[in-house]
Amino acid sequence: MPKPSFDQAGLFSDAARRAAFFRETLPDRRQRPLADYGEMLRSLAAPTPETGLPADEVIGALDEQMQPGLHAMAGRRFFGWVIGASHPVGVAADWLASAWGQNAGNHQASPAAAATETVAAGWLLDLLGLPREASVGFVTGATVANFVCLAAARSEVLRRVGWDVEARGLFGAPPIKVVIGDDAHTTVFSALQLLGLGHDRVVRVATDTQGRIEAEAFAVALKASEGPAIAVLQAGQINTGASDPFRRLMPFAHRHGAWIHVDGAFGLWARASAQTAEQVAGVEEADSWATDGHKWLQTPYDSGYAIIRDSQAHRRAMTAAASYLPEVAAGERDPSHFVPELSRRARGFPSWAMIRHLGRAGIAAMIERHCALARRIAQALESEPGISILNQVCLNQIAVRFGSELPVAEGDTLTQAVIARLQADGTCFAGGARWRDRAIMRLSVISWQTDTTDADATVAAILSAWRACRG
Image (tube, rainbow, N blue to C red; front, top):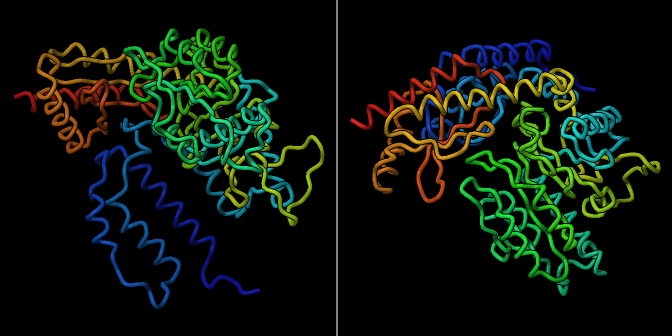
């Protein structure tokens, strides 16, 4: 067998040294990329290489050339979108997963990867207080988790009326009614589109000021339905952090025989803390749940979980049959039965490592700290004249509006100007969004490192940007 023409240990050590340097210097760099996409493209553009470079030079060039275009997503003061900070323990586990080169498709391919997924799945169900009989698919993130769960929902509700969608497809199938809140996340609509259920043919239900489904409107929407139905609920609205009133909604859905799916990309983790669990009380009565590991569990990208109460429905929707795949003993969990891919990386290792490292107490403490920091930031900002917090800060999300006394268009312009100035400053990073037809700055407190010092520095930076833009 040919051996590498380079020192593997030296190459890995160099990569580790560079990675550690990046992490250690994050607090001292601007919390944004120094180069935008166009600048990065121009700097990287080159003809296809005709000859190769030595391995150490390739890694050196990769590190040096990419630095200007890297975001500070793993930093202490990154509040953009809802992005976890890739905890070092998860990163180290992910490095090992890459070095081991395991295809996590089945038991025979990698017994270690398959067993780790089984154990980590049990831990997840326990931490999130979900039915222990549920099956878990380790996927890329909540987008694919929503897809997998809704595929199982589609399969089961059609099976109940005598239609085999896996064999016959949707041509001639009974129509499925999908009832969903007005403020559901875009990834759910993407999943419906991919599954042939359409993102516009859904029945959209009115929501309250925090994005929670109105129970009365939900009941009316379901009452008007006949035949197969899927109800999509939400734990953690992306702008407000609010969750649907599950205890009020579940009985309506059960009464009409609807499959209940919950998009809980980050909000489902409220179950892991006694302080926040009541916000999602009743969520365990659903049929499926989608959530992320790369948000509140702090695993590196990519990591998500498709959780389904009825493992048989899960298997029907996902299992791929091939003569070369090994048979699985009755009662055993086969990884390929619960995800769309056969060949895939071993995502279970970082999930196992993060749960083993933090434990139940550490996960709960982190969630509680993030929620407390979000309240601290919101209270400090709202005390400044002209700044409004548009959400009840119930979890880790903050929706900030600047120029609250101004007409909508002027307030939009001012809010966008504050965001641009804050991003240019680089002390922290927060992005923009629209909420109730108004521009907002949205902060998501979700880095494992963020503490009160970071929260206070963030407030100071935002107030500085606001005062400069206000004039």
